[in-house]
Each structure stands twice: as structure tokens, then as C-alpha cells.
Image (tube, rainbow, N blue to C red; front, side):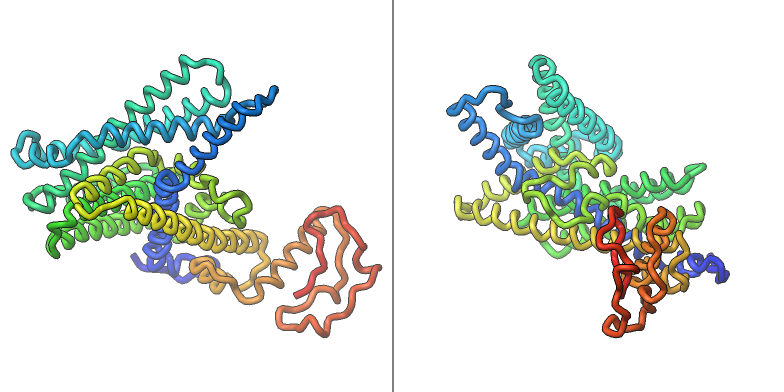
Length: 453
């Protein structure tokens, strides 16, 4: 790949070098969103269930007519909590050591089992998302049909238990591969190269398919990272440096294959390196404003469908591994459980702050893109670098005011005088005072404001 340097298209000069940077930044943002969904189930969902139970008690005591006892969202929270609790209770009776003993004795063909798990996981995730949407639709549109709600709840419980069992089996396969079978470890790495080959052999890959491929890779990497952490936690008492290195090797190859695949796809499709930033911007549109609602709000729910992530099964597996670790630890007490919950709550808050930071950075990117489309920013090369790094270019505030003035003129608003618009380097202290003839006292246009730096 030889980068070209045409004056009319400066993006081609740096596409090859910034694809890895923008791709990994997009994956990082997506993994933070997925982690927020898991932490929501572990920390916030029990609090929302307690609030719903308190509302049931107050409604029963006051007996207010004409008001529903629970909203559809609270009903869904209760059913979701019951599904997670029952799934965890049933999965606790399944000993992971039983999985390991079956795999070590060769009862299952490990290589065929690895391929089967890679195929069944996306299928099960798709079923889970559709069942969840069906249950939410039942609670919102047809709350009186109890039989349909019970049937959807039973389907959700069966699916969650099945998917959690698959993920626990996948975690056991990773433990066996790292602990005993080096050929199986090689197979886990080679499967990632098979995905690389399948991505390159796809024909007629447009921007929508490439974006879908990026979202799929975000889910796969997050799931793999979570399973690797669970495998390390399961072997915590007997963990060695070689064990941790083999786990790290699986993750390193996953990152490398993703980088090679998307660099090749960007070259084949002719997409700019800003494509991955635009993809992550679409995910963070709902997070670009400061948090005005309660901290109990689940912000990750609207974007999880893009990643095809259903967090209930993953949360159950995480709690199951934590329970296994606490069961074998003789010094584990209720105090440790409380400290663990507080630690997860602090992690949830830090993760939310990180998402808010990246949302503000991507909001700046959307504004720069808007100014570039309207030919307001002049230096294309400098603007392109600032778009990649999510930084404000020089004279950004002034150019933004110029864009607003042009938009006002296009919409038929009043035009400001030439003295009102200053250059980026001028000082506002020496600007001429605006008179009532220049600007009206009040305007009905929401974008109207005095143009100054």
C-alpha cells in the first residue's frame, strides 16, 4: 500500500497509519458500553428491583385508583431480576469441575466442541435479543394477557440458562487448553485467523456491512476478554506465569487479527480511517449530553442491539465464577460480599465517567465534520488530524460562530454586522459594542446569539 498525497484529498495520506488507532479506540468505546451493561445487572438492577418492591408496598397500603401499580419498565426489571436469580441458582448446581473432568477424559471431541461453541454463541445471542424484545412488547402493549407473558418469561429463563451453560463450557475449554492441551490452544488461535479469511473473502462489502462487522468484533472481543478473566479467576489459587501468558497470547492474537482484517477491509473498500470514528459516534449519540437523569438509568440498553449483546448470560457466568471462588475460599464472609458490591459500584461509576468523556469527544468530532461539510474550516490537512485525535482545531470557536451566522442567513434570520464577527486572534475587550439596531432584544430563533469570540 503506497499512500498518495493529492492536495484535494489529504485523508489518503494517513489512512494506513491511523486505521489501527481509530479501530482500537472504537473497540475500546464499545467494550466500555458492554461493560456498563454487565455492571448494571450486578449493581443497579437490584436497586431498581428494591424501588419497584417499595412501590408495590406503598400502592397496596394507599390503594390509589386510576394508577398502575408498576410501569412496564419496572415489570421488566422484576422479571429480568428473577430470570438472572433463577439462572444463577440453577447454574450453581452445575459444577465447573464436572465440565473439566469430562473434557480431560476426552468424552467430548474438543476440536469439534470449540467450533460448535463458536457457531452456537451468535445464534443463541440472536434468540435472546428477540425473546427480550417480545417480552418487553408484551408488557408494554398487552399487559393483560397473562398467558403470553408467562410463556415469554419461561422462554427467557430457558434461553438464559442454556446460553449461560454454553459460556461456562467455553470457559472450561479455555482452562483445559491453557492447562493441558497445547494443540487446543493453537486451535483457539487459528479460529481467529479463519475469521480474518472469511472477512476478506466477502464480496460487495459496503459501509453498512463493514460497520456491522466492526460491531460483531466488539462483542467477540468483549466476550473473549470476559471469559479469559473468568478462567484466570477460576484458577486463581494455582495460577502460574505460564498460565497468564497463554491467556494473554489468546487476547494478543485476537487484537492482531482484528487490526489486520480491518486494515485490509479499509484498503479494499476505500474507507477512510475516520470511518471507525463515525461508527463509534453512532454508538455514543445517546451519551453526548451530561447525565440529567438518575444514576439508575440503563444507558447501554439502546445500543446493545447493534453489538448483538445480551448481557444476562454473561452476568450469570461472572457471578457463578465469583461464587465458585468464594466457595473455595474459607475466609470469605458477608463483609467481603459487601466490599465486592461497593467495588463493583465504584467501577460502574468510573466506567460511566469514561463513557461521558468519550461521548463529549465524539460530539466535538460531529461538529468538526459538520463544519467540514459546509466548507467553513479552511485547512483540510490540519482539520483531518484534529478529527482523528478528537481535538479542537485552531480557530474552532470562531468558525463555529461563522457557521451559525451562515445558517441564520439561510433560514431568513437577521444578519449581524461586519463589526460583530471578529477574527480568531482578536480580543473581545476591543470589540465594538452591539447596539439595538444590530441585534434585536429577543429572537424566536433558538440558534440566534451574539457572534463574538
